[in-house]
Amino acid sequence: MNIETAGARLKKIRQEKGLSLEDVQKKTKIHLNVLRAIEGDSISNLSPIYLKGFIKIYCGSLGLDPADYIGSSSQPPVKPVLNATVGRPIGGRIENKPSFIKDASMKLNAMNLSLNLKKMAVFVLLGVIFIFLGVNLIKFIFSRKKSPLEKAKILMVASTQKSAAAAQAKVSKDLIQGVTVGIFARDKSWISAKADGKTIFHGALGRGRSQTWHAKEKIELSLGDAGAVELQVNDQRFPNLGRRGKPLKNILINKEGLKIAR
Image (cartoon, rainbow, N blue to C red; front, side, top):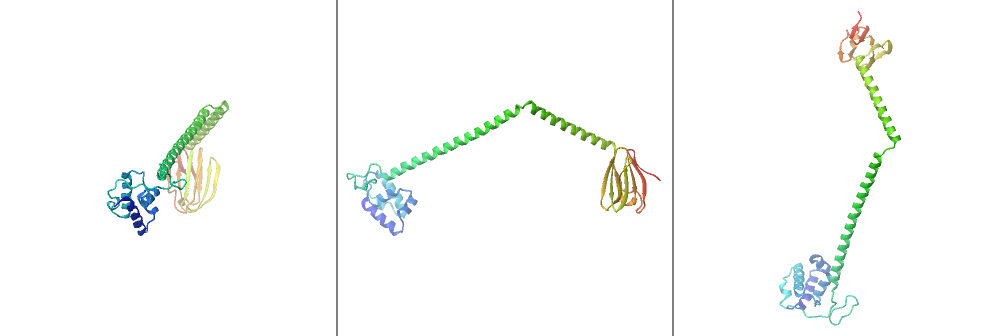
């Protein structure tokens, strides 16, 4: 069997299997022009080794034994083919550069273009990064060179913060040195309270409510129900000041502690 009749047989079997040349091309990755040339027995300037290789792949895609289609012929007969450009024979020979080789060259050029674009994108990205770093470096350098007015503002803010901290420390010290009283009502109770002689609370304290007072020297309390409230004097707790329902007056709380006049 020779190559010239093998192409026609392959074409017939392909058609019987309901496959198009595009289907075979997808399975074999062989260029369509080469497949058409094999089926038309029109390949003349391709090495027999490559030709046999293409036919083996083609047969494999159709489930055929390549030995039945390659035969023993080392070189297929020459047939004139059409010029891919103008559509006429060229002196009984095919064009020196087949169209599938042109397509391969175009693909290589496209790949090179893609690589060049990727390199350009990397360079652009690096440029943006360097610009970003440069701008931030310049900002940092200029931020270190502050004008005398800016330095004066910074010193003023620092001084204000220092004064505020000192005032807060003084208040905290006064709180520690003075008297702090917290009162919690287990039940509703009438209460009158003075801090350093000034009335700070006078009325009923509802159940579950609480109050906290501070004085430099003393706090004076009067309770309508001694058993309804409990006190916290600085860090000392007084949960029971008297019987439930018993009024309690003239409670003196100072730095020395709590005193109840009898």
